[in-house]
Length: 473
Image (tube, rainbow, N blue to C red; front, side, top):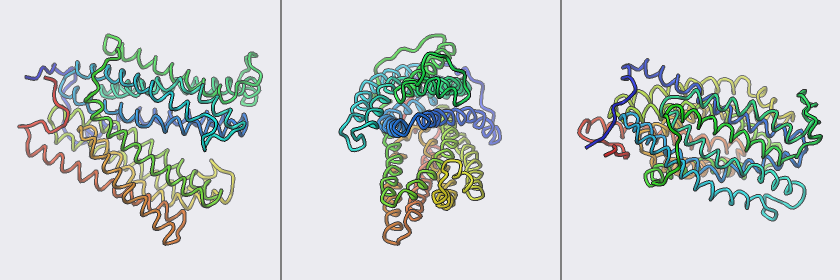
């Protein structure tokens, strides 16, 4: 017998227009918050570049290693998405709170595992950490940044809880607060009064030159902790009590592990493409990185929409309303394809101008503008696959995106990229066309999978709960 509580939320308004508006209202703050996360990274890179080439190399490398070791724990905790949203859709507020506390317990455990790994990866003697000034700065940056691992994972849990409650404005406010604090703090701890003066910021008279890379790392840890404290305060006010870490992670790991695996799979294939490009000279490497960075920004925009889609689908599935879950997916798809259509047009018409904002090298800019034409072609595929993966996640089917990512990116995209780039001699252009093929394959597989899942549910409704997430009993 279900012990579902009466839902404190009003009944959903019917109709696609209402669903489209609900998804857009939920997605807006999430999109801006994801842009804010990226901005913090850009500010740290900018500050490091002002300090010196060693600091820039250390912060860039240290940041890449930081996200590489945290991508699976983040995916693991994103497994909270379907649990919380479906629980709230059924009116099981108690279960959503329990899931949050279990997520916090798992976040604590994962931070204890990943922090030593991160510290070890930045030691002298590894291939990416040559002895010398860069290695010293890398170790210093890692020591300052390592304290932000636990706040990062706690932030993921709190974000899943708040967006599940459709309270996304506080997430945006927290990111805005972190950015406002990070700009002066990173500049001051990294470069001291000298850098503050060169940037037109007030001098404090305490540090003349700053602490370099370790100062930038410490600044990131401080602002991450402040942001998490703010979200904890919001969550406590929303729920009337403070969350406490607890055990009981079986369901969360079952749902989250495939999400972490799919994130590793997709991120890994683009990392592999960067290794392939490294054989083609500095201009090609630079153009590839410029194109990848610009394409990543448009992906971030769709990431906010996809998170909102996951919540809306999860709520509908929690209520057993699979028809509404299709509406939510279509709404997210329309929003994301609209964004990607604009970005594709911008890449085609303003590719050289955008590349020129990142690089001053004429050869790099020219090549990047040509690669952006290919990136424009896969914008719609990329948007479709991220939304459909989120819809399946919201419905509780997290294994499908994992196998889709493995088949599409490693079974189709990377081999196709190798074939066109090396066997057909199209070079870096062939590499990007191959990656585009992988994204197209993922969009097709995920769309067909979601259609089949929802069709099966509609045929069986209301007799059975098709979602892998069982109601509280």
